[in-house]
Length: 184
Image (cartoon, rainbow, N blue to C red; front, side):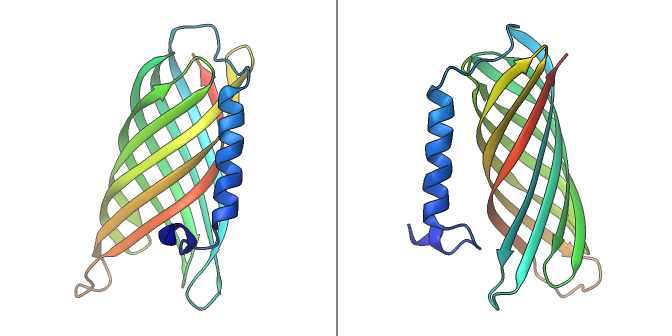
């Protein structure tokens, strides 16, 4: 439990609240579109604020675009492209690509695992790492779904293009996202 208390501004109460909402939505009468197999485009976005060790605000924004082969109540796989912006010590922008796999239940609950490669963030390159997403989506009409997810992302950037003596940059974070899906 100590690790959860030390992650930025995400505290234990917020985590319990989000997990309660996810459980409620997963057990509610949510449903996926009636198709069993589809190609799905999923867009996720988040804006969150944390604080650094000096209690200065740090803003992180991420937008990801995923293309998935959806199997309702079965294994799902595809790939994603993520764009992110951060304001840590200085403003930085980054991107990453990666394969993903997971599971979408018929009730709308989903789990995804992504392994990002070729990641860069500001002056840092040669990055890789993983992200785990738990979420829920609701079919709102035609082929459109909306929902939310909660993610854990662990990235390691190995090369600093402006300082050859720099060792590495590790980023570990938890964050919520809003999700919009479209089934083709």
